[in-house]
Length: 244
Image 1 (cartoon, rainbow, N blue to C red):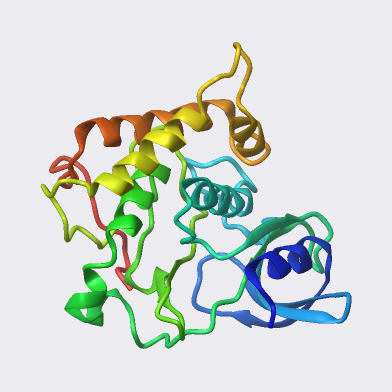
Image 2: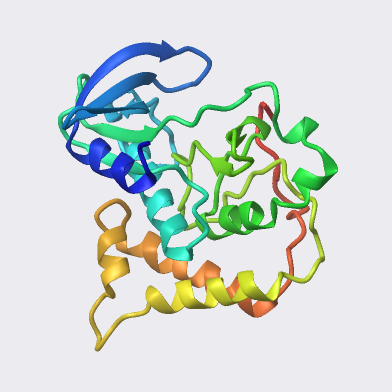
């Protein structure tokens, strides 16, 4: 059985071959295989040169933001984002490689059971922290072990408020104490050490700008201090389109 640790090693070191293209996205996205030391994993490959230019995000930066989202998920200890790496020598050039999660595409946020919706508090907090501009209902995957995984974070981490999500289930609720503590720890890990960037900040700056990393820590700090799930901003669009 290939573990998450094995998957990360295979993605980092494996030879990648494209199996087919996902056709419903706005950027070029491919199903691929990564093979290393006789082990194989299916993965989602997003080449940087296949990204559609956006007016508010730097050119060819979306794949790197996918990797940053994985690093944040791991730093929070929430394991929400599948193992993701930046591959410099993919079949179509540099881009992100993310472990493919086997799931039922017909089961998504809009038809989750009430019990499954109640498990989405970490998802909501994660999107608030990374400033996710595109949390659609189909971007939350439930695997065969009933674990939730989050995908598609290319338009995240902007310094300005860009949050757009379909998940507003917990507005006004207190953030659970354990999740609040995780946010505090995460923000602390991003603070400078003896006047120099922290190890986590340095790692993230391989994929984000210094200002974006600083803003990331500030969002986590403010969210923990507020202690409540916020409401949508009434003066800006709070939902993505399409919503699925």
